[in-house]
Length: 212
Image (cartoon, rainbow, N blue to C red; front, side, top):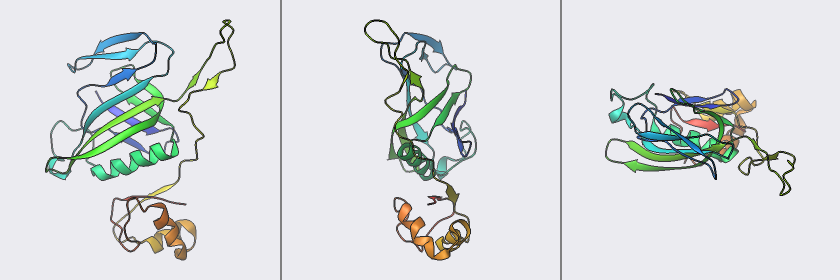
């Protein structure tokens, strides 16, 4: 089994490296079908038309655990996952959640997440929740179907900002000159990324910066 999360725009895709022990599914008033996946226990898969939520708790491995044999895909610094999740939630980025060998292949939003430093190996324990990104038909009390309404989580979505992954030898001035047309605009990039940058003169390879 593999878990993939893809941006609907096709810009970014991640593979969950450390599979969770279980994936929780919920939907108000919906009937559930139960499936067993790779000896992980019974997982409940929604079999109705309600608004679904998918959540799990797992670990993003630190560099000292990068070679564990059961990990999926290439190792990525856990801090980068934190940046990606923050961007997805902040901008309401439309996503596609895919869990291979299951029926889970849905358009979603990242509705909630949390990160905690775990142990002495650089690992981050996290919990994440995704909610359906789709329309729900709401019927009147008389049984007549009203105009389809957007789900409550489908808020006004801003266009996903462009990003840039810092490479060795980069500085904000050069990045601004290349992507904004004027190196003097480097503070625009810094002000947009103060959650990960503490000094406009100090950036590190691998950091994912939002661009104006």
